[in-house]
Amino acid sequence: MDKITKVSVTTVPEPQGNIYSNCLKVGPQLILSGMIADDTSGDAYEQSMNCFYKIKELVEAAGGRMEDVAKLNIYLTDMENRPAFGKARGKYFSRRMPCSTLVAITALAQPGALVEIEATAFLGAGV
Image (tube, rainbow, N blue to C red; front, side, top):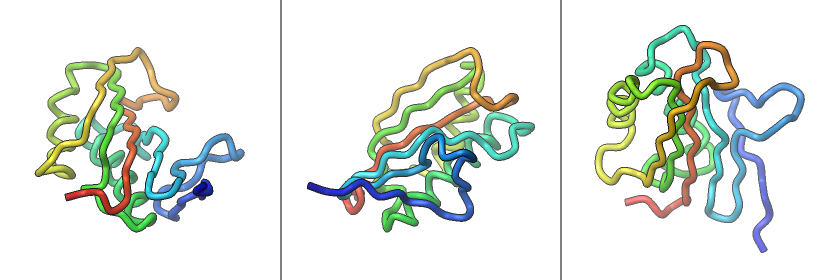
């Protein structure tokens, strides 16, 4: 049976207090916690771009590529931000889009956060 290992990079700091892990690897599978932008004063596009940057950093640190991402769970505080999120997603995924779930919620854990993105990837499985 594959062991669970933590994947970390300095560009995506782990949360204080050891309350959760940003990314865990189980065999070829990566499970990423929801990513929120470092700077929540930006608009939905800027925040989405920062979330995807963090996902990319963690996937690559594990030896993968963004093409290995198979599933996204997206949380928006306002569905009016869906086009901005979609534009950012298009910068990171251009061929095959991952499976996705998009949910509107009333608030995120960080004040000012407009978007949070979780990801699941399978290393080496991307096209």
